View 1 (cartoon, one colour):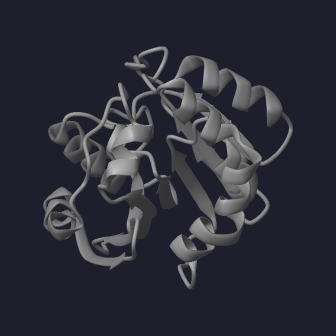
View 2: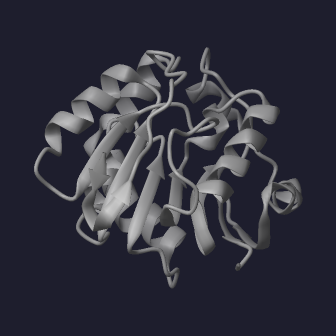
Length: 210
């Protein structure tokens, strides 16, 4: 299959699980106008400020696609990889005919060619990848599909009682920003920058140049 910008995708069997376990409150928040406003005015600008992320972009775990709506106008071409079959189908239907392509698949085992993307983005989704060894597999896969020198960037959450309450019965494996740079280095990234604020942290990591 050919994508915008001449990208080629080779399909292999995917381990899409069907539905990602999240409680009803969490599902509601991820679709809400409040969350979209927060994404547009705070989280995404903070995550991507001064980061050279445009071009051929892969977003992993877009969920209902509020982040996708904000990224698409700025990306040259945008591929979204979502493990939840229903969310992937809905997001794909809403983005027919544009610069967005939606694939249903597992980010720990991507059916994508090596060196395909300029940037890979992940917003508040890595803590749903369980266990930690699966996160490490995802990091290795991101490094593989990035071009040499490509950027992996995003945001994830810090622990708190409110965060735990919102994720009751969810799949949850919190990332520790103190160990993330080491883990990304082991996955194939040569440089990592991490910034921490009250409730979350952003990360930027670059694949080693050729």
